[in-house]
Image 1: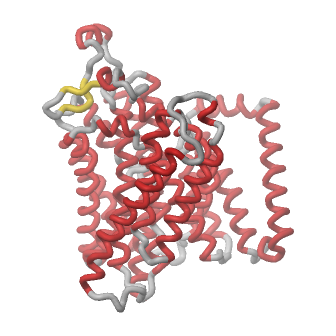
Image 2 (image 1 turned 135 degrees about the horizontal axis):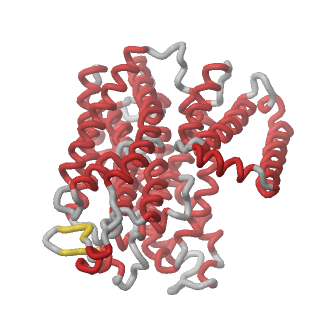
Length: 503
């Protein structure tokens, strides 16, 4: 940490950094003055909700930078900013605006998850690797769900909701550590960074999809009250089919519109902005349109499938990094709102200590069981017991999905019982970020040098750098995958993620 502080001091004491600070101050000043000019009282203190949103954004940025300096995830600082502001300042935000911001953040999360699901790598995923990623996720989901039934007397549907919220791994915490491991050469050739990044992305997909499917069953808003039981049961599968169909069709359209190229050159990137706008607008239509027609589960799935379908062709034309960079710019703004807003929901004067204790108990039981199961299911995929233990602890941190969907149930709750359950899920989601994001980052930084080792040169010669990452009756290796026609490298997943260290 001292070295980090020294490097930060040297960085700050440069004219380039001071110019950057001045630029940032001017930008924020003009943004605020423009808000005042357009919205008048709504952007003025002390009661203007836009003033409080702007203040939260500034605090989230400052606290995020402080967290970065002390080598903690920036999202933890943003969450702390929301908690402090929410407990020290009396204010009320526009609920529709807050809901829209969370929906937009979820849209960016899903688009990025789809773009990061590298088709060439997934093609080589055997059943054993799908087992490694899927089983721990569903074990934690069901364990947390069972704990919520015992502690909070949730019914089955509500137990699944809290399970899906808390089971997702956060790429925002995992990816930076995996990149450091990749660059340091620890356990080189084992595919550990690739496996962990794939797990984080797929976990997010399963979590958001599962949550949106069961949300409609858990909360009766009255919109489907006239439906027969059969129609209600068919709603889930129908929404999945429609979401996948829209995603496949729109993803295919994105191969050829606004322009089609068969190679990777400068000409192929001329239409990046129109292509990105079409991706973004189609995603917004799918997400908000599905809510409008009361098919909430179809939207997130459509966005994810569309991004994945598009990247199958885009990866051949070097387009995915351009689109990822554009999404990153939007994400850098939205994530400051996302995490500070969930922090604002933790009001100490209304927090029930009993609920907090039970929520932490549910969370920790789920994590402990997930770590054990993750260690067991990574048997026979080419990792030694220390590497398997590291992989198991790498799947502890939670943040991004919890902040995006944690408040969703409370936002649409109608009955008093549903509101109480929604507040419990929101509290559990915020606590999961507060506890596991720093612990996960510390675990990975502490364990990586103790459990992972650099391969011996003689071993590399004897093994011909052919260390397997997947084994399921066939012998697939990093080298074999690298030599595939359509693959640049899959340390590949890591390469695709290195364009964004600030997830």
